Length: 298
Image (cartoon, rainbow, N blue to C red):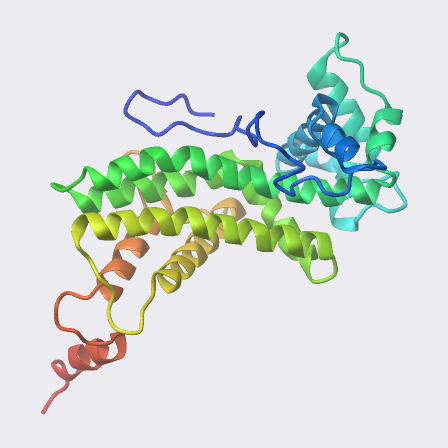
C-alpha cells in the first residue's frame, strides 16, 4: 500500500465495518445460529465471528494476488459455492488462527456453533464483504465532501482528485473485487442478490447526500427530466466499468499517479457538463440537437 502524504486522502485497505457496528441489527450477519434473537445478536457481534469474517476477507485479498491464488482455488466443503471455493471452512479457520495468534484460540466447533452449514457462513460473508465497501466509502467521503465544498477556485481539480482516489480504492480494497464475484452468483444465489441490493441502496444514499450538498452549495440544478438518482446511477456505472478495466490489467492509462487524475474524473466532468442546466432550460436531447444543428451545413 502506498504511504499517504499529509495532503492525500487516506488509503483504506485496512478498514472493515466498524467494531462498534451492530452486525445483527444492521442485517449484515443474518444466518447465525441460535434459538433466541438475543443469542443470535450476541454471537453475531462476538469477536470470534468477526475474526472468521475478516479471515475470509483476507483470503479474498489473496485470491487476487497471482502468487497466492492457485493454492486457494479448491474446496473441502460440499455446500460451498463454486465461485467461492477458496473460502473453505479449513482455509478460513487457518487464516483466522494466523491473524489472531495463539492467545486467541479459535476452533472449527466455534464456526459450526455460529453457522450450522458452511453455506450459511458464505451467505453472511457476502453481506459482510459488501458492507466493507460501504464502510470504507463512508470513511473516505468526509474528505471528499471537504474537497468539493471548499474548491470554489478550482472545482475541476477537486473532481479529479475525488475520482482518482475513488478509482484507486478498486486496487486497494478486496471488497471492490469481491463485488464481481457476488454479481456473478447473484442470479442463482438469493443471499448474494440481497446483499448486492442492500449495498447499492446504501452506496446510493451516501453518494446522493454528497452530490446534493455540492449542488446546494453551488446553486446548481439539472436539466429537465434529469434527477439526482439518474446522475448517481450513471456515475456509479462509469466508476464500476472503469474499475473493472483497471483490475483487468489491460495496460490502459486510467490513472495518472503523477498528476493524481483519472479517466473517471474526465467522465465525471463530462457528465456534469452534459446534465447540469447552464440556464438554457433545454432537455439533454434538445441541447444535443441544438449543438448538432449549429454544425450542420446549410
